[in-house]
Amino acid sequence: MSFDVTVAPKFDTCFAVNCRMCNSQNFVRVDESDFIAWRNGELIQNALPYLDANERELLQTQICGTCFDYIFSDEN
Image (cartoon, rainbow, N blue to C red; front, side, top):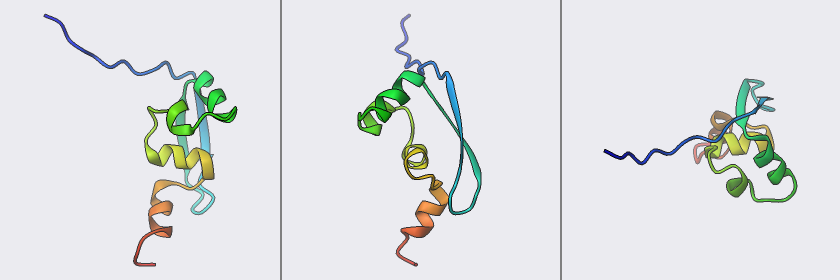
C-alpha cells in the first residue's frame, strides 16, 4: 500500500509578532531560507506558500486576521 503524504517543511524559525491594532501576540513559524527569500524580493505567497493569508498579512503589516477583517468589513 502506498500513501501520498504532503510533508510540512522544516520550520526552524519562529517570529513573535504583536498586532499593531490590538497588540495581541501571534507566533509564525517559517523555514529561515524561505523567509530570507521573501525579504530578498520573492513574493510572500511564493516564498512562504505554507502560511495562510492571515499569517502572511501579519508578517507584512503586523495586523492580525481579526483586526484586518474588522478594518475592511463592509459594516465599518
